[in-house]
Image 1: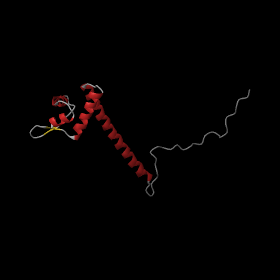
Image 2: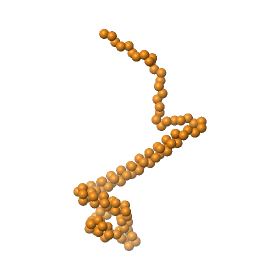
Image 3: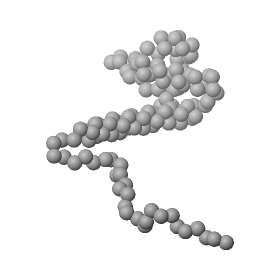
Image 4: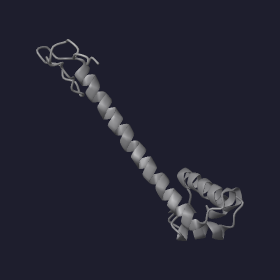
Length: 125
């Protein structure tokens, strides 16, 4: 509830209402329209208060930082999924099936026969 959160974080309930109006917090509501804060909401509030109190960031800056954090988190999840997929693919390719050729994800260069192995002649002065 808003009063409990305000007391716990030593802020005025109007500050929490402001954060909600600005879209920084989105607490759920009970059937009686009471704001209910989840653990995720409280973690987000911790970040907001750190940015505003400790670092002096204004609310517009807080919004930008929070959006960037969410995008970075999404990107991290995508990278982790890509790595997991790549690891599964590598694991599947590391055990060749009977009669199956092994292929590498990175093509290997086979040396081609070239000019003779003799070094070019040196110039004499």
